[in-house]
Structure formats: structure tokens, C-alpha cells
Length: 90
Image (tube, rainbow, N blue to C red):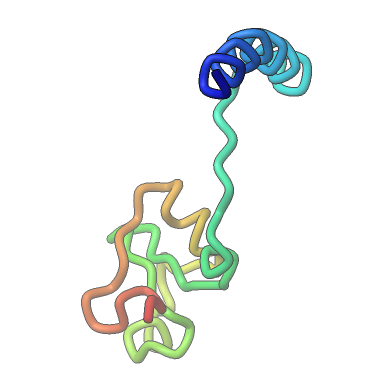
């Protein structure tokens, strides 16, 4: 009996939740919540599309085509982590 009551309640609440989501998110865009580690600063080589930890030897010697950015921004740009430092991943 409890299962049926919960199922009925779920069916009643589902459209209300979807309508609320439409109000809060009118563009129906996807929310991406970055991991805490993704807010760390990395060095992105805009030529090779590889990002490095700021302490990486390669990043320190990079003077051309390198910018400081967040790891999440580097990932959004399609960059991959450095094979040596793993882009600051643990």
C-alpha cells in the first residue's frame, strides 16, 4: 500500500518539478558543475592544446602560446592534460 501511495505521489509531483525546472532554467541549458579541482589554475598551450600544472617543468619553460587559465576552461576548450604532470591531477 505504501509503495502505491509513493508511486501516486511521485506521478503527481513529477510534472510540477519539471515545470519548476523550466522556470528556473528557461533556456533548457545543461548545468555543468565543475569539480573543486577544476577551478585550479593551469598553463594551457594554445598551440598543442595541452594543459600543465603550474609547477610542471614544461609549463615553466613555455614562453610562446601559453596562457594561464582554469582547468575547467582548458577542458572546455578541448585541451588534454600533460603526459608528464597529468595537468595537475593527483
